[in-house]
Image 1 (cartoon, rainbow, N blue to C red):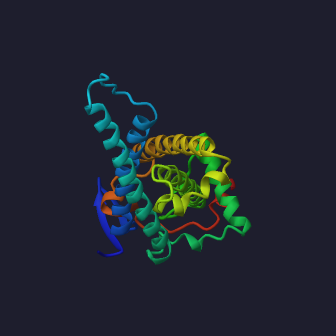
Image 2 (image 1 turned 90 degrees about the vertical axis):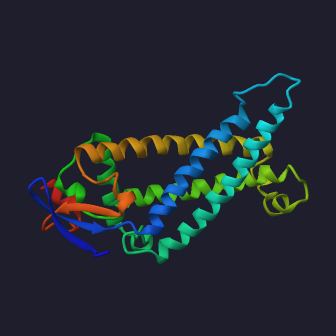
Image 3 (image 1 turned 60 degrees about the vertical axis):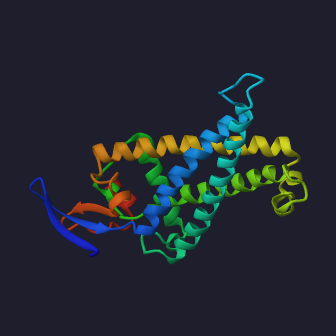
Length: 245
């Protein structure tokens, strides 16, 4: 796959860039499936919406199946997350988050500039100043990664209580006293779940908005890996300064 390919769309000459490699795309869709299953099964485990009669053993089977699925996809989500953490350093330049310098003022200036644009839905051509993640997106995903890590720790800690002294209880049992008891751990687990649901709603709706009104090919980029820009486009340095002029 060539990095840059020039082609014509609706009489307009554009350049497409290979941004999201196959590992990133596959990992993204694994997350989509895993998080979807985890949310569905988590809701059922917390508040079963199918309640069989007392003499129907199938009810116990449904709950057991939901718990097994929840645990299985928690493992999948965790392993996928660990691999993605590795790929932050091994992936291409668009995926390597360590190139963003959070200790520099420009990082936070760009993040604040992007936040104001997102809130007001006020865009200029400088909105497309980069191909990979902008600094606000980077900051968001770092926070999301940390939240998902706490979600995994609390989940495995609760799972360990099913078999006291077993593998998961031995490995993650310290989490429960750290947060002041199992009730607190369960509450933290639920709060983070709702935070992830809120992020998903924002993420999906905003990607659709950008696809329709701003950046064509935004949706398909996580399938093909390609992003498009007008012919002759170049990254913009310090776009917040350009915008103010």
